[in-house]
Image (cartoon, rainbow, N blue to C red; front, side, top):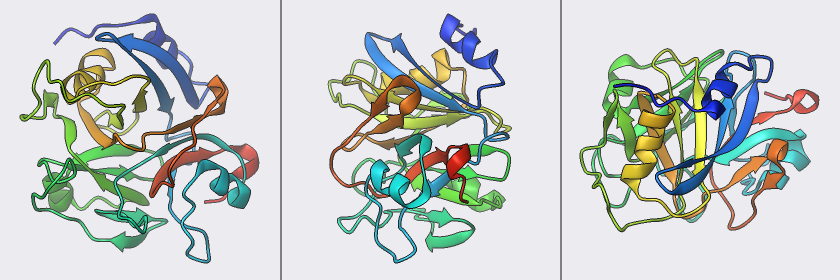
Length: 244
């Protein structure tokens, strides 16, 4: 595969001093906002509930409790009580076990996957591989379907599908040094969203987060989405707010 390089992608790769970079780009007729986080420089982590057990539900609630965020995004599907549908680990504590079997909806469209955050790297694992390798994740969230698995698109994606929604997800390099989050600014189908990660961003692993409550907090580009209460959130507390 020949990588389709863009000025944006080159700028992201050429700016190591900036540990969180958010920019807009166009792909297959849809605009996207992407944020690349350097996990070796920034304490990327998950957020679900405060010390009392109350679900945060919004970017503002996280900031009120822990301080300002330099980046955040919803990060996995959840039940009506906002508890995670699948595997969830926060600060090394398992809140929800791995769900390995097929099931209804996008989450159960196997293969699905797990986004694993370690001390200085982060990687998307297909769920079966995650169970086999049992990586030591400081934070982890399960979602589905996988968008890209070892450079291949999910086998059930259909080119030209008319199932189009606003969608968000994350892609990583195999060594976990590159982590890129993306959200569509308009509606997009699974196939085109997956090719964004594989063909435009050159990432061999990518995981879908959601399409109904997709939201992004990126103050660097003047954006902080609001809406229905969220479950798991992935983000980075800025220097003044680093807390875990």
